[in-house]
Image (cartoon, rainbow, N blue to C red; front, side, top):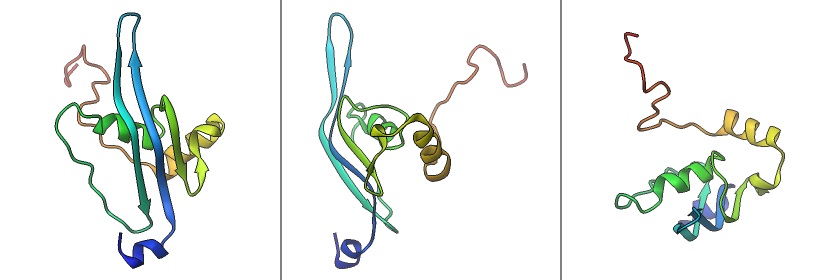
Length: 112
């Protein structure tokens, strides 16, 4: 982080984020103590091999999925400690997603 980044507002911060997917027979830990801080004006990239949790982490940062534990702060407020209305406004005004595959109607062709 350079000096100018230190002076800018922290927009979003992930603190010790964990995500575990569990079924009756197994547990899959996708994120383990993941953290991130993004300041106003920064452009960042999240890169890594397939299956390491990039999409899961982005879904949590954007409020689309909840972490198993840890916090996501937007301008200092824990987004998951707020009510559903806060999350809706947060996603509507501050988050944009372009999904790689979003099969909304996977049983129909575009023509149908």
